[in-house]
Image (cartoon, rainbow, N blue to C red; front, side, top):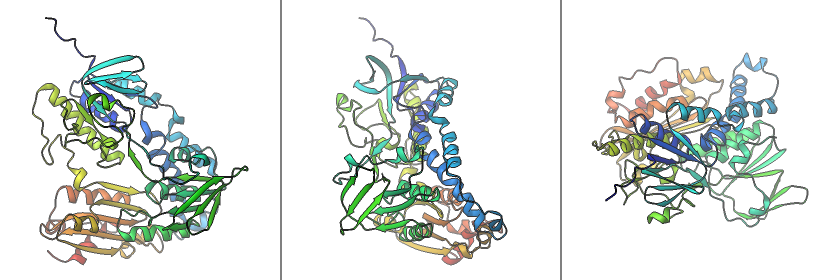
Length: 470
C-alpha cells in the first residue's frame, strides 16, 4: 500500500495582514514549513488602509494643537496645517501602497508567499487559482469587512468607506461621517483638521462602548474643533445629486449636505468565500475557537484575529497570532500545548484585558471592563474617578489641561479590572493599567509603585488616594 504523499507545507496561513504574518513567523521560528496566501497587499488592512494611515492623518494636527496649548510656543505657531504635506506623509507610511518591504520580510523569515485568493476545498487543502496546496494545518487570518447600514440609496451614493478615506488624494470641502465609533470619530477629527467642514452623525452617543463620560468629552472636543456633532439620529435616505453633492435625509426631517459621505458603522468577521462549507463550517459568521485559536470540532484548522470575533483590534489579533503560531508548532511536533488560563499557547487576555486607544484629541485610552460590563459579569465593584487636569504633570502638557480617569475595582479581590483615561497624551499611560490588570496586582501593592514627578502618571497616585488604603 502506497504511503500518503507528504503535504506541500506544514502550515498554510490564509491572509497576510499583521495577524497572518505573526502566525507564520512564530510557527516558522519553531521549524514549521509555512506558506502564506494573500489576495491583496502583504501587510494587510492595518498597514495600508487602517491603523497606520489614519494615525498619520491625525498626528500632524495633534502636534500643532500641542504647541498651541502652551504659552510661548503658541505665539510661535502662526500658520495652519499643510494638507498636501499631511497627505504625502500619510502616503509614506503606506509605502505608497507597495508591499515590497513586507514581501522581503517574509523572505527573510523563510515564509513562502502565494499570491491569490485562498479557499478551502477540503480538510487541509487550500485552492489558490487552479492549484490545490496541501498542509498539515491551516490558519485563517482574513480579518474583517465593513458592515453597511440599511439606508435607502446608500449603495448608489458611492459613499466612502474607511479605505477611501485613509487613501484619499484630496481633502473634500465638506464631509458627512456616519458612525460614531472609533474609526468614524477619528476620521472626523482628521478631516476637520485638514480643512473639511465635517458633520458627524451617529445613532448612539459617540464611542458608546466606553464609559459614558468618554463620549461626552469627545463630543465636546469635536464641537470645539468645528465638527457638527449630531447623536441619536435616524436615517431616511441618502442621495448623490448630479453635481456630486451628497444629501442625507434624517428621520427628524432635516437634511445634511456634503461633498462626500463616509460610512463607518462597524465591521464583521471576513469568513465569506473561504470554502468553509467544504469542511462543514458555516460561512459568514465568526469562527468559534478555543483559547489556542483552534476551530472547535477540528484538529487542523485555526481562526486567528478578527475572523473569530473575540476582539477586533490589530494588537489583540497579533497577540492571538503569537499564541496560535506556537500552539500549531507544538501540536505538529507532538509536544504539550499549554492552553490553560494565561498559558503559553492561550489568548486569555481577550476576556479580561483588551487595551484600546482612540487617537482623537483628547485621546481615549481604556483597558479591561467598563463599570457596566463589570456589573453585568457579576463583579462586586467600586469605581473611582479623578480629573487629570489636577495633576501637576498634566499641567505641563497643556495650559488648561482637562481630562478624566476612572478605575473599576473588584472589591472581593482588591484588584483593578478596568481603567479609562481621557486627555492629551494619555495613550502612553495605558500599558501600566494593562499590566496591573493582567498581573492582578493588589491595590495594596500598587501603593508601592511610585509615579515620577511631575508626570501625568501621577494620576495613579491620585486615583489610589481617592480610593483610600485597602
